[in-house]
Image (cartoon, rainbow, N blue to C red; front, side):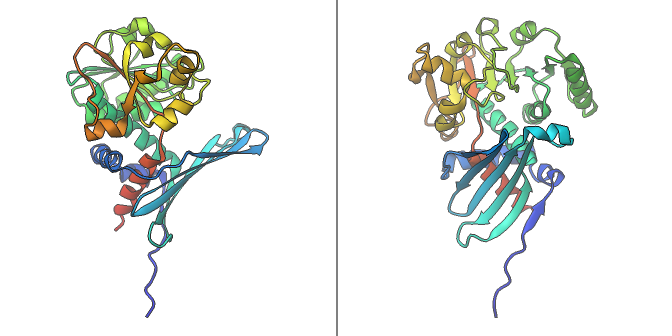
Length: 315
């Protein structure tokens, strides 16, 4: 008698978020980075009229996963999100489809968890003040992840170019019980923060190195193209610099690509990637006074690990 193939599981955004509690997700990512996976460079295809299709594959001995992302600038006029994402998870042995997941929820959750995982190695253990620069969709999830996994944080400040958006995000997070308030002046907010998390699409530096106090951890998440920047050269050069993956960050992260290309920074200034920190191959923070920097552009390894965790909730 032929065996019945497992049914394809479909997970909505709410189901993805519910299946990825912060602490368990961070531990899942730590294991994934320590073990490694095959992660080819993502494929980007222009579809014409400014539209694009991105394919982000990864696989290991147990599973294959591909995130499919569409970028449709015309969606604003259609009252639809510009970026849409779906994740497909397959069995490695047979290639059978196992799950379809909401790709945006998966991305939001794993991105925030990866930053907090890096901060475990790079931020001071006595850090009390977090500043989040940015008010987009990811900004709130960064605040939630840090709050959940670093309960010693007693102050969370939100800064945004648009004060109305910052106020709205502060109200939303405050309603959830986070110790959050609005930051009106970015310079003073950075100077008083122990952890500065940037989640913007800025093309000019927002956080300047001269503002950073000894012991600060700088978490750069937003800028993901070579022409984007959230910090200046001084901030990068004053810091011990780590990245999520060398292949991705050194090709896409403007905060690093620009000073490298223009000869203002040597490649050796980028000390290593998150997998090396997790495995203990390279030490993270060496003293309470040094400034550390983590730059992420995202890796499909994180998607694969998180998607497998979601599927496990249905077994």
